[in-house]
Length: 343
Ligand code: UDP
Ligand code: MG
Image 1 (tube, rainbow, N blue to C red):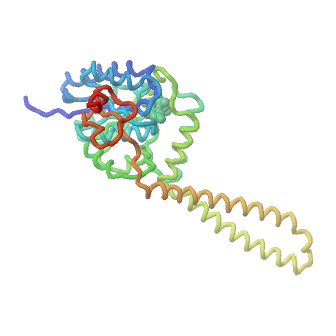
Image 2 (image 1 turned 90 degrees about the horizontal axis):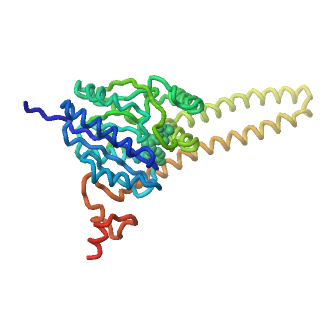
Image 3 (image 1 turned 60 degrees about the vertical axis):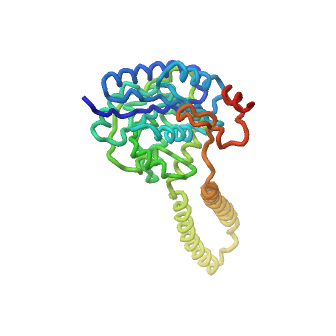
């Protein structure tokens, strides 16, 4: 029986994940073994671990994994660029060799047993399969509340997000090719992928607690993630300011008429308090407006620069020599490169 099986690459962004990485590799390897023996994927399928500038032993574990495990391959970024960008770096690499890609976090919170369902859907012709959490029982109260607030806010602003879907999903090569055309600086994958289109579906799963280690998303990162999500998709904040401006203008007209009437009646002495209040109110509003407009101008500024989002330090996936285009050696060169350079 001759049929070509799809080559699957599982992309895992890893930032300081030394506590959990070996277990993640072990479980995903077992999963790949199982799927290959069930003839759901090609035996050339891979597990691509992207080291997002970790400061611990994450890269050592990845390179060891590459040496010992035929599925494991790695990509080391030159510095920490954040989850979304690290994931994008992995997806762009994976695109080179894969027919479909599954992205998953390193901490085993997402139930890997639904990978099989992802693939069944893929074989049925779906191009994007979203993993959707059926509940948030395992999250802390705080995380649950902030996350829910985030989805609500995004919805109100007209940004199409898949509710309770993180970055656990399958995408086919066609989707990845389209994704590659989105060249924006503030890349918010969860918002962009629903924009791409194609035949999509969802698979439900229970989200578990982190297998080991701590969350790499402290409140500060979460807030900046939410802010990026809003401002890179929506001009609603600007519209809101404009609307507020019109509204205040209208109120100002009424207040002016009122003041005139008071003047003709002869009660003009008692205007100090309202004057002070309006000066402060308007001053504050203007600053707020300028701040928000400035934010968007800042974004335009960042976009027009067209800076690369990340740099690859070591690429074990495509085996391309990352030094070929460089005039200087990388700071963390692996021994073979050092040897070559001495010659
Ligand atoms: N991550 C990353 N770069 C970062 C922060 C996180 O690559 O700067 C990775 C991390 O290793 C993990 C995934 O993104 O695989 C999700 O992070 P985490 O599980 O800490 O987030 P949470 O599940 O708590 O939202
Ligand atoms: Mg997690």
